[in-house]
Image (cartoon, rainbow, N blue to C red):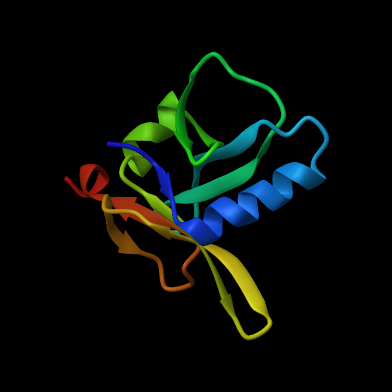
Length: 112
């Protein structure tokens, strides 16, 4: 599997990369957080890391650390605009449940 970007997400990441000196791609992962277990981390990468897997799409790289890969493999990252709000949206097939506030999620592996 892989982590993929929709066309609007590719364009938004390209914009961020053009505004970030030394930007080499999108860093994506998770951290333990919230009431459900995992929260997404997303940032512009300015350096490489030994433990990351790199997915390339339309000239944009998505860098995922090995520890996060089990929770995010297969995720589609979208960028949506609704009125004045703009945000990245994560469509993760591994999500089994989300907390009520939407800040964290649980995977099937955790629930087992």
